[in-house]
Amino acid sequence: MAKTMIASLIAALMFGGCGVGSVVALPFKAAGAAVNVVAPDVVGDTISGVGDVADTVIPF
Image (cartoon, one colour):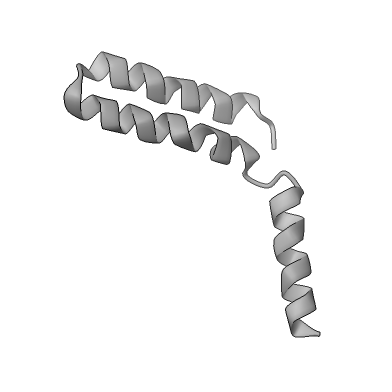
């Protein structure tokens, strides 16, 4: 019974749209941070900015 309730809660959080914007933005933020190491900050910050915009635009 407890396993079913936990699985239901996890499924509701995953498929309910909770954090979708953050999940979409994560690769852009990670790539921007990696690019900042080898390129000028403007380039990496621009890539990270795409992630920030995606996180803001996706309302759920």
